[in-house]
Image (cartoon, rainbow, N blue to C red; front, top):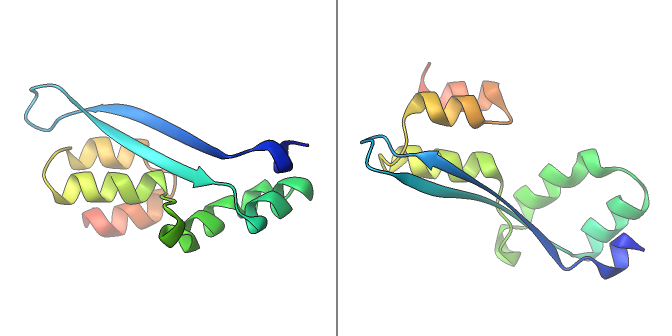
Length: 97
């Protein structure tokens, strides 16, 4: 039932800016596609990050990709990016920690 009625999910975090002047928005976006509906129906939600990664053309985005983008633009610190990352090893490599 959820797989048929779901349109999308947006997850967000407000992260302190590196310069201390406020916060910046980080988003993870999932839109319902046949692949998303299928993994939900089959209770294989562990596959969703891979689907989001390949669904960039449909507007999907992983939180880790947003964190990397915000760090690369100098908006958040490496500590904040690492602390909030889902895939710590990949984030550590990107941040050269």
